[in-house]
Length: 442
Image (cartoon, rainbow, N blue to C red; front, side, top):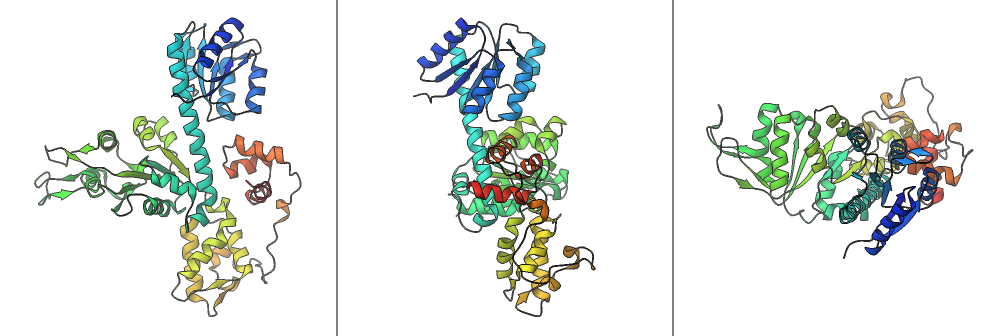
C-alpha cells in the first residue's frame, strides 16, 4: 500500500485545483487548496506538509520567488512546479533553486501522482535525517560515551554516512562508535585518510594491485576496499579524493565490484561506508571539484559535528572523560572548567584532549586548578583567571532578556537546528540559546 502524504496545492485555477485534489484523495493523500501565496505560507506555518504543488503564476506572488522562500524556510519540503506558462528558462531556474520536479498543464494525473509520492518519500526521509542529525549533534559528547537511540538507528542501517565538521571535532571517533554499534562490529574497521595518500597511490591503496602492475609492485596487494569486506570502510577527508578515483569509487558503491590495479578479474566487496570531511562538499560540487553523483551517493545520512566553541556545555563531560584516562586520574576544579569553557578551541576536541593530558601530567596535586592549565588555553599570561571554584556564572551577554518561546522555536527551525546560526539570528550567544532550549525541553 502506498504511504499517505500531506499535499499543499498552491493553485488559483479552482477547477484544476479541485481536480488535482480529487486525484490525490483517491490515492489516500490529504490535499489542501491555497489559491494565493498568502494562504500558502499561512498553511505552511500552521502544519507540516510533505509536498507543495506550486503554480508559477499566483495572484499575489511570483512562483519563483515563492519557491526561493519555501526552500529557505522549509528546506525539507519538496516542491513540484505545475504551470501552464512553461518555458525552458523557468524550468531550469526552478530546478536550480531546488524544485523537486517540473510539470506542465494539463499533466498526466497518473504521472503527477507518481511524482507526488516520490517527492513525499524524499521529504519525509530528509525530515527524519534532520531529526537524527539534531539528536546526534545534541548528544554527541555525552551519548558517544554510552549509547544513543539516534546513533543506534543510524548504525544499524547500511546507508552511507557523511560526517561533516572542522578538524579535531571527533569525526573518526564518531565513525568508530557507529561501527561498534553496527551489526558489522565483529568485522574490521578500515580507515584511510584520502589527504594523506598521494593521488598516484590512492587507487592502489583503495583497490589493491597485482604483481607487476607498476614499477615497484613486486607482490600482489589487496586494497582497503577488499580488506573492509563485511565491515566498515572509513574514508577521512573524502573531499580530497582525486577526480579520476572518484568515478572508480562510485562504481564500487553502485555495483559492489572493483578491479585491482593491473587485474582483469572482477572482485566483490560488501562494506558500509562512513565518510568524513572538513570541507563544504556541496560547494565543492558546485565548483566542479567533486562529482555530484558521488556526493549524493555518500550523502545517505548527513551528520554535522558542531565545533567545540559552539557547545561549551560539553566541555566538563569531555574533560572528565579524558581525565579518567590519565596514568593518574585527576579531577578538575570548577574554576579550571570555567577557564576551559572560556577558550574558543580552534583545534576542537583534539586540542582539549591534549590540554587535559598536559595539565593532568604536570599537576602536583590530585586536583587540577587554573594554574595548572597551559598558558595558550588561558590566553595572555597576565590575563585574569578565575581564582575560586565558584558557581559557574554566565557573562552579562548571556542574560535571559528577550526570551520568547515562539521566537526561539522559529529561529531553530529557520536555521534547520544549527544552534550557532539560530543564536546569531536571535542576537544571543550559543550558551544562552542552549539554556533556553533546556528550558523548553528541546
